Image 1: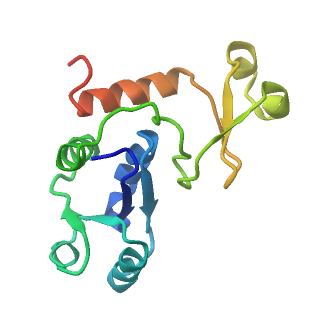
Image 2 (image 1 turned 90 degrees about the vertical axis):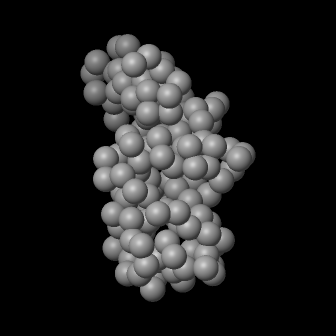
Length: 157
């Protein structure tokens, strides 16, 4: 599959949505939507529905996948295997909170919003144009990537 696969996830898969976004995949999370609302949005957008609900996954009128595992890193591995997802150059390009593509921002433009240690140690920043959250490639970034690479079978055990 290609990098541009788009997903929609129902209320039971919020953590999976964040990990898919971390990988750079477009993953809409419908936190508070009812079953009919999830179906309506899936039909409207043509996205692939990821769900833990058998009744939604069995619908023949939508593209869907029933996520079997209840552990998030196993879910990542399961969905990656099913759809051919992998770590690409698009990792860490989406806001993990609101799914919007991040935009590069100059350090000077965010300096006052940064913790003191980050001001001293980091020089590359991105901002979410949706929610305003600021991202930088610190230790959390490295740990998240390592965790994801292990889940995808691409990292050290």
